[in-house]
Image (cartoon, one colour):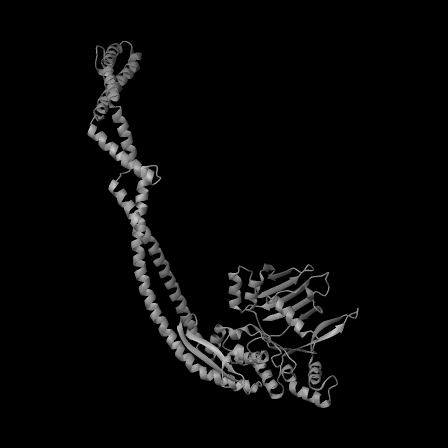
Length: 551
């Protein structure tokens, strides 16, 4: 709901503030007083393009601010969250035009683009100007209106949830099929690489160990010679080290009884003797491990050649890298099988959901068809009341493939002059007629549909008398559920407002005319409506008529 509109330095408006109530706000004033200028300023915060010619004082920027109560507007709050903008019960929308002509827009003091501004404010204000009824060209609005009158809104919402669920599953199925197709292109090559690695059948660190073993075998003669010489020095020859140490240990032990302090040295010599004896034994064992078999060397060389070929092919460095690659290939080929299972499962789920979806769509279509005659009859009755007795309204409902709104395509049709030829509403109606048709539609759907602040610009153009009175009644009825602001020249409409704004021009100290707005008290309101009936100097009859209308 619009709580306050503040306009500064815009066209012939120096500064003014409008604070509408939550019901029907009527705006009246002489032609040229500035009513359209106020709408132009309001359009700025709705995302319209700015024009620097509106600056009165070129030394100051032009500012338009709208204060909105959005505490109960969950759709708008969600849209703010999606745009990552601050949320509160009150939303302040500001538009500035600098002295240099640069325009900026803000939502809760955060700069936003005009595209985002237009998108978000469409959830706050519905501005019905002549030739500007885009809602009547919107299939979504037309279907919502039909569902509201036919009490199928809840059914349509259930269908939409099922539709989005089906859409999600269908997208997952498409993604998996795309993944399957991509993997299928690569799977043959991956299988070839895996088979090559499996055939090689390398064990952990095998290439590195084989390389080391082959190097040892290449130097086996020198290794054996060193091991044999070392063992011989310890246990063979004329004076083997092991035997000499054993003899020294025995001799020292023989004198420890007379020289006890040698006991420690004797034990150390014995320990060295035992260690060298063990070393000699291990040298013999190591000598036995050294292979000289040419067949084994050939086998090792073949394994190393296979290993190095695979390492180079895959840009790897170690056996571990090849084994990791082997595992990845196995996992990816297994995933191909998994995606096949997922496709089978999703295809089955998608089929069941589509069957359920089409059944829901068919049931929804049946209910909508039943609602069409009722909707058409009520609109045609209202069109007579609002001064369009020759117009005939109809609804064309055609079957389509299931979409977000169901399996129906809706089109509002109009025969403006009983010609027997119906055309889409936006082509058949004039601007004033469109305004009244929209009023009729929204008055029927007011209770069922959530709508933003509704602003009607001269919805009563071209009518008077009873038709104008009926328009006023419809506006008043609509305002029971939604905030309505109506610019009017008809006393029958102006009298139905719960708050009456009067727009006028006033000369400032420099004799420059500026637009002003004030809320009329009851007696002022009677006089203003009497002037709308009988001119600047209304008669007693006009005043009496005005009192009757207001009361």
